[in-house]
Length: 284
Image 1 (cartoon, rainbow, N blue to C red):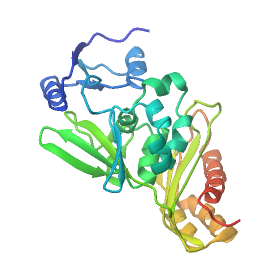
Image 2: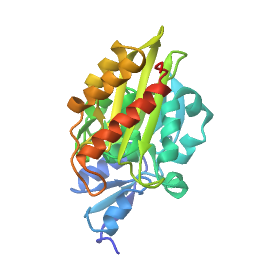
Image 3: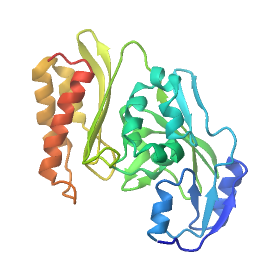
């Protein structure tokens, strides 16, 4: 299939990209293109202009400062996957990335593109939410930080405006008390997950605190299971896990789709919670 006709402009800087977006209504940003190009080819997107940000310097770095790990918007999945810094300081991200598509996808796909596209079945938006991270957005009025809890607003809808550029995401750097877990169920490796779960917590003696459970594939956005979080933190061991699984009935309201029914998704959500609870260090 062929995409509709569009104009193309490479941006020299973030500011230049914002200018281009402002000049052309309906313009879209091109980063890795792993989500956008298929949409173009299927004619599900009809942008007047593609603003290519791949030549903008300094958007492809991973760094640690002020207790956070920062990923530039153009960091490729493969670069994060092979990074010792990410493995050490952002282990949830490191666990999730191998589940993203296949090697060819990860070689071109970007961290920023995945978060900005906000596919509700994608891994990285859920990880950002589970870690309580934040996004740095550049726009016509300057730069601002948006917490992950406020970033994802609806199906493929985020805090990004039509003239905004996602320049960086930041997540808290891991400490000795950090606990993370990740699991997903898909029909084949590389497929979008039927249901997935990204989780983080802090060790508190024999128990956990600051539990964050972010499900993907069960709603229009990544979904925090807040009642299950509270149940898992309130009681250690098998009783805490089962109380958390029971709480999912109120936390999650998935819809039927072509892959699985809502009932199957709810069941799988409980299966994943039991798996991830063990990764978080809950005693069995």
